[in-house]
Image (tube, rainbow, N blue to C red; front, side):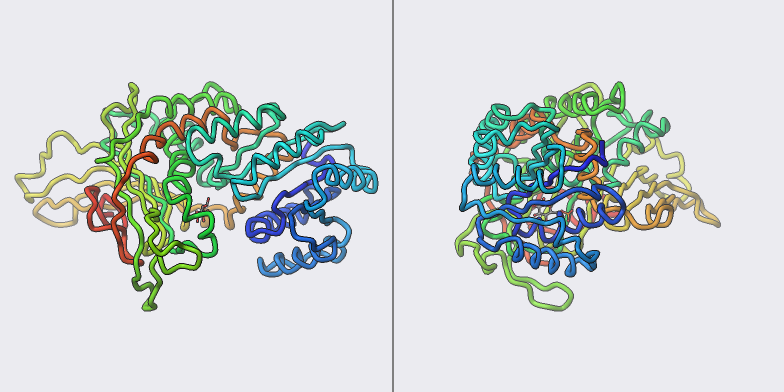
Length: 471
Ligand code: BG6
């Protein structure tokens, strides 16, 4: 199925996502032999015509270090300005399909600002673009809603025109090799699985740290904030993969079912278990960095959080009583996505009388990006007398074993072509995840300042530093 000809329609085709992620991924896939007969139709409001869009595409590919094959842009790329309405779009789609003898397989990719989702879905549905002779798939980018009510409303709207098996809700973290590996790591290695529960695990920490500030996305970000932008989706997805039960099979429905069960067992955190922060002017690499409120497009009195740290509890047999700490922020000292499992210490340290030392907990540190891999920390005896314990680690590095890793978007696009929904978020997952955070969105949570280039607000009940465990 992955190699059938299809039409890839991108709604929001002149935006950043298209330029930086989708076009490069589409072109790389094309170079690797996927979708060689595919045609791309860019749709946006600007009136730039086919030529203008091709020039935009060439420029974007060049910026990503790619040199498009001669004729790729001129023979495979078209543009439609939505100023001509959805009926016009439907006509254009049919024209292109006839010209390229395409069988009617269509992907509609919504790379749009969230407020444009409803009218676009309705436009596609009302003009009959949700049905064709071949297959039709709808890809929806995050954020999927801005709270529980709007997510349900959006799901209902999608459901009015598309069947759930046509819908691909993107969380690009699920496309990262290292995130997919979490399932293999857990369910192919029985030694870890046998330790993966409340009797052996003291706590779990999930960090997604970013160096970048809000960049050019203030228009969206200032109304969203880190809780909606990162925690409700990426961090919560990581949590479900760490915490879920073993699925019966490696099939999309089995996996999604287990993920939903974890989400259902999480209650909303109380206000006391949440810290919000916002970066103020600071220094990174010896250079002055602007504060969030000085960024272009941000309201000067904005109270939007650019940092969140919170504690969740999962009320099920496996995890009851084990805190899960989630933390993310912009303008932190370095880019790092890491999951840390802290195992319980040995109940009695028999070495204390000798060297006066404590046994350290065993720690499994899974680095999602960069420097992808994992480290298992354990204690050894330092050479010599008296007996002193020293922490050492076993390491695995993805790139040393396998070389370059594919971009998440490439992986996800291939799955959309194949019709594999495993790495996409089910309707119920989105709603359950919003249910957890919805009460916080209605609270007034103080936003503490932190200097750009530091690890977050000082006013923080959670452990501080690059790693909460002091690694
Ligand atoms: C996006 C968020 O979903 O993920 C951005 O909207 C964030 O704010 C980005 O920067 C992080 O993705 P990655 O893959 O660079 O960790």
